[in-house]
Length: 142
Picture (cartoon, one colour):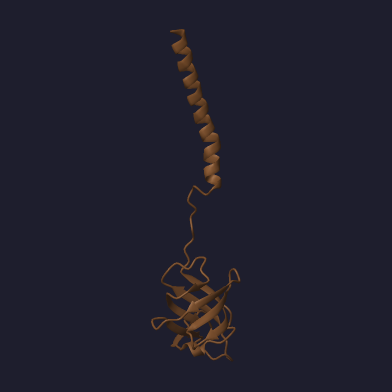
């Protein structure tokens, strides 16, 4: 009977050490390997400056304002191209703090020029992409 008790105690001790080993080693290793899911951001718009226009192949190269990365924006037939214009002449700028609603003017891709500041609104998540084509609209900002 003593022999059976010693075996049972040894088995229990081995189980306890096994559980301790598992929680100290494997849990840490799992988190190092990315076992836990990382949350990814979703981005559906970007602002930037046009650095190249290719009217023949229907795309713009844009340098983003936030990170300074270059992105290829492919324009489709469904993409709405808009230029926002101030509702007053350039020589009669209102005082600071004046509120106004800019006029929207439909344009074509050839109206875009290098240096234009634009806003791009997409239909799909573009986080981390260097090229995308599901563009709802592109606005040239005033």
